[in-house]
Length: 228
Length: 228
Image 1 (cartoon, each protein chain N blue to C red):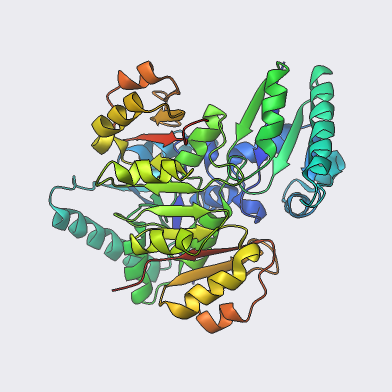
Image 2 (cartoon, rainbow over the protein chains, first blue to last red):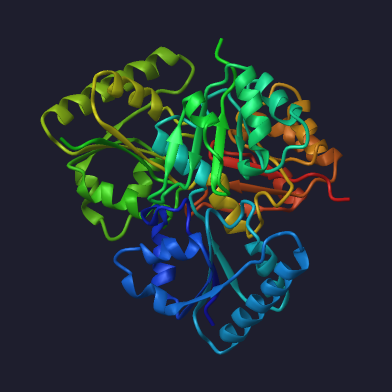
């Protein structure tokens, strides 16, 4: 029996998916996809125009009440498992990489517990793809990288920067006011990215231009230590 | 005039390169590649069997005397630039992602300074690919990630772990003794990976099995905060 494939779609640009992900999508009978960005990547994936015929979309409710999301994951898990038992080639896609702040591993854990064979296909994380697009190295020799998905106090950002670490911040929209303040105060080189891989994509390293943006959910900033 | 392409090959497994990287390799007239792992990825890349005919290998001298490596980069830069001026489609490949501890951006900076058009194609970093292979999430909601390429004191590793951050260590071979000691002392879940994507690939989360390894240059460890 084949395995259930968890397919990382990468950064948002369809041609940033890997050959392994491409083959897995092509060979899937049914593809489960959270509605929104993941489906938009599949829509634009050439030369697999018929991909959407195989897609079963699901909505992840907004995170106010986590039990709602849990209910959706339970349903997706059950559908994946049932179809797998019927020897269908099923897959679940996720934006970015499945191992980085994705909920896919909750489903992986449950499927594995039930004895299903699962394969996880990695992808290019958005902060990696964005820096390539901006033509700025993410981390250079001798530097460390701190990847933050939540900020409790400004020192969560300032301490690693002071220690010479590059700081990448996901879920920036939640913290945009404090990050804008921090960049107003200190002279840190940065790269701001939103809607990577999409037509709406916008990148800037210019302070004024960043300060005037309202950061959407899909936005990231990479801040470098102060240049000496 | 087309652009000089800097192509990230990803983690070592040929099918972990992206569609964009694949197309860029196919369309290249001449591909510059550091000898060793990068060439081994190109060798194994189906269905592009004739790729090696287009490859011009170069050796990066070991890092004892950095001026030797600089000389090599200067030569590669000059060759890339000359061929670009002759309207050849040229590319430079790099293992992993070009923005993560790669020397490719030194060449990018020099080419850009001379007025050449350059495109950087991102790839799946090895620590991302390795965790997918091990079926362990890299960072979960609420966790931060600290990526280290050098360790000066044990606190560089212990402090982020104590703060609930996941720690990934590149260039592990240089620090293997202190990391082994740290894992002997504290009960940290970890994933150790060597020779990712290669036939020699080896992964383990078992302490005894890690302690008995001699870490090669291509080895990484991801350490999770102590489970409570």
